[in-house]
Length: 397
Ligand code: C5P
Image (cartoon, rainbow, N blue to C red; front, top):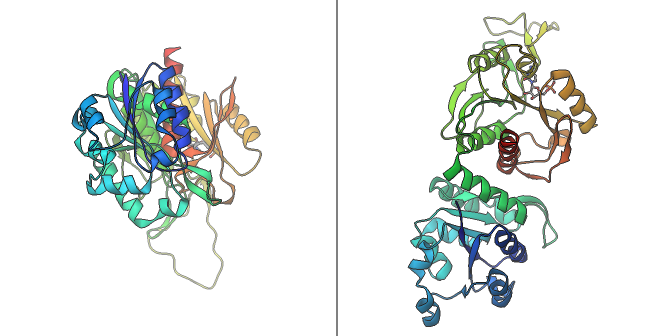
């Protein structure tokens, strides 16, 4: 259980959110000790950080008083979690390269505790190839990232790079804590469908769609982290597979349905795949050649996996969750889908104008037969965490 956090505040305008974060962590009885970098102290004062945390604020590596109170090695170890929020492009780069030229970066090198990073930067700095390389290096090193969110920036630009909100950070910490220690879903089994399906027209052509699989992969990862015995049933994608869940790769909707049915009985079914609604009856065994004539495809409707799983008499998972990608009247259409398909929850999103597909962020309306909740725009990882938390609450209620 996380009882203490070492919070490193680096120099970004979003540092003001860290004050609220300290307050919220303290409300949860988490002891917070803060390290303020030199540039961090341009945005928030040591006095406000000390007052809110109730602890001495550490800033300098070679400060005799600070080192006397607690040396930097001890500081890096005498905590349950090191949290960097906000994390600037600079600290991310220093972490990736292992530099340690101040107290914050030295602690990050010396710690033997889990590290979580909450980036906050301008959209172009976020998308810069160097930043993305550094982030990938840190992810490969086991560092966990929270956010960033998309939205208006202090500099007037718009895009990805906004620091996650304090409550979102708390949710991620709780999820991380759960995944490390409690594994609240350890007695549950789950399967998740993700990605597109492909319906062959001839050996080289197929019908498919834009789904990247990112949201489903993030959900499978999150459920696995929470201890669920998780299987990811995925159509063809180009993204890295989650680590831990069992993986079943399929191409067509019928193969995906088969794979799902083989997972039964299961406690939780999440259908996030963008299943092709039709398959080709008159598919050819050799490549179709041009003849100068029009040709037509004869299409049959594919099985609706979500519908089939939801309406099973035997072995229906106790929680069946679907997605609704809508281009208009999102809430109304999603509710109709909830009832017509018979699932328990729907996560609806607006996919008009290329929103969602292939993106890293998602904006969900969460619908059950009694609740309609509009979630903020957030990363697909954060959507997965929030959904996992709802699943945990559902089973513990
Ligand atoms: O009907 P529509 O495709 O909009 O419904 C979306 C939901 O239904 C998603 O959860 C999707 O995974 C699921 N679905 C399915 N099998 C299909 C079509 C959709 O499981 N053939």
